[in-house]
Image 1 (cartoon, one colour):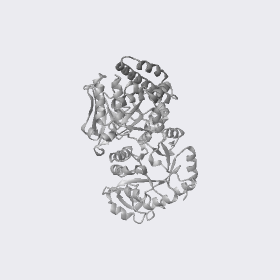
Image 2 (cartoon, rainbow, N blue to C red):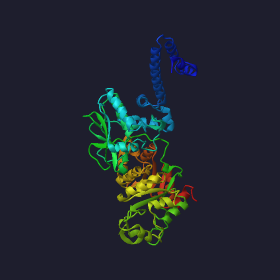
Image 3 (cartoon, rainbow, N blue to C red):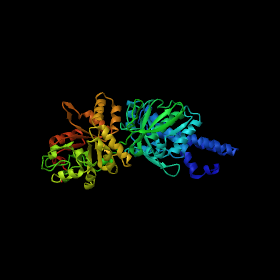
Image 4 (tube, rainbow, N blue to C red):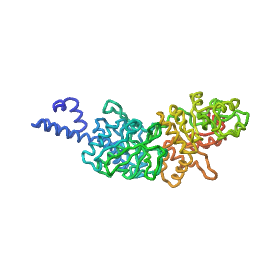
Length: 544
């Protein structure tokens, strides 16, 4: 575009309005005798003014934050714009991400508690070739330690798309056109950016994890600025699984070769130098789809609504029990699952049949067909797949009792994530089921923590470690807890405040007294797990 075109009509008038000082400079450039030099000077000036304007807009978006936080967010967007320019795409303005649900104040509060947290604006959908070129050109420019660029394992290249997508559906994002005409999504989260992962010695199941684009953007920014890279002696797990859930990617900076390496390892692999950088940055107003359109407070029918659980009566966790719960007004069906002898995920709480069928055998020793016969007159046996099919409007809160069932639970839930919440006393089993759902290509179901994660959360809250508590809560969608554990209160004002500040619901079990139900809801509890969903429906005016 020549100088005459560039300075004509509406564009010139707009430039004069946006940047008054540009008019004087522009007139001088147009009147210069050396047209080529004038055009170069104008382009340089316009680039500088555009950058300054972008900084001005960024600062305005974060004006309500303190100076330190505002500066750090502005730097994140400055680095994002620089990255976008290098690959030929647009970077989002802060206002666009805020409109999409980004909560800068919540992130700033977390960063104030944990100085290692760094806001990172990362693009998803660039592809492996674009990232390798970014690292190659950074090395070519002489940036510290980046001479060799980016090295990706064969498994990572083969399934790069699984790692190149926003990992958490609740994360606010803004889409732009990609360099090849495709689609790129931008998201901003706060990432623990210390030299080592913030949590070490863990396998992949102990997430949540930083994404590959976030880690690459973080490392690229440090290398381009001449700062020391992270992970020079440690490895960081990355979000997303490969090879049908058997592998996960990990990040390291190889100082000897000056390269960032992304390798693939078994998800169970762990060691003292391997860990996680749990990100913070879910949208404040974007709950998991499992909770969309459900009533408040939630009524979770504990093992359905069983007429009785004695031998010969309608049994818990059966088709009849769930149908009864649905009739009286329950929102969700709390249930349990185990694996039968022939590998079916059946909805049964106990490890054996003694209580429900006067049969001493373990569930794992009995085939589905025989279990079906045993429960034919007691309400009807259901598998998890059967339950999702026969109650198409139902939401299932699935307690995975048997570690052997985790893989299949995840596979079944993968296509029904908006209707399934996965929980369990064992966090290892719960996480294995979630990883299986992700590996089978579906959205990740909602989840609530098991004993170990809940204990970590209570410990963090007890000592006022708010940043640690926020990281734990970032992994879950609900806390499902007893009101007390012996003499020790579990439900406290501090727990409720922390959960709600991080968009996590609190459900209390097992409450059958309507007055107690109402009192708990008055304290701020979001859901009641009960054997008497009929009484809960009346207590909350939801009877049918």
